[in-house]
Length: 423
Image (cartoon, rainbow, N blue to C red; front, side, top):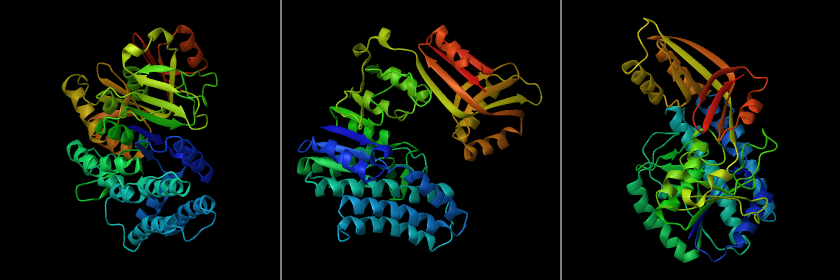
């Protein structure tokens, strides 16, 4: 049994869905769980709907209508304009639930509203994919992942209840694999025990697929991307990036920790715990074997080139104690507790006698409350519009190349990794 994950780029329109169906047709009759993300930029579009509804701008319905139109147009192309196909009614039910929310004033917390609305993207996309597969003779069963993945109520970044979810997967998903061989379901979303919809964090579909792979003891998990595999850098930023045929779990975790976008940071642990290979392949060129992530004994470290991860839109936050007390032990613990409280990750941190610096993602809804609380005991300085460059397996030439002509505000260098905060 295998688990496949297809991201939004692979199903961005009707042509993309047809391409995905062509790939899946080659696995017809095999037990397969297919995890699918929202189409293209649908999540962004639904985030605009959330903002409009929560802020009562009066444009929420208009924005939702655009989402409806894009999905119905895709359906028109997929099903030759057959408006009687059941997928139209199924999608309308999802959208109608959101419209019912619009009939009331937004009284709930923003993050709760966010999850109830944004989750529709995955539900709509999987309805289209599943219906088109059946339409083209690839039998499958559509599964609402909220019946399987149970979480706490940390909306927008929910934590999975592994015990309950494992039981639900075996009760509700496993029997379907023997009935129809292929199951199409959603990534990124789950539900509380009370059945309120939650999300697992942006780009969380990889994590969903890894959870299923773990719970079903899959032989492998494959993430289908618009790149040939894992590359030594983002080809949009580094045109001469090269494909890496094999990586260890450890190396992949390091890459995702430092911000590589190929796979979600939480993806590796569930599959590593079961020794399940993770394969990154191209939906554009499915004949390319891609990159395999597995145990360290399958990888020759000498074959790994310098790996460059560039994170944009970074802030360098520097705080100094107001009373000149040392930033050590007790104070340092308090600082990290504040970061954890506001769910702000320090991508790089450094402390001196009375100061502490951290490079963080510029996410206003997290950063602003953190800074407000820090001001009680610290004086702060913020440097914006920065980049964090991380080079794994660095060479002097690589450091010189990526720092050339840049002002380095902070640098950390270890045995295998160097990080530079630059502007």
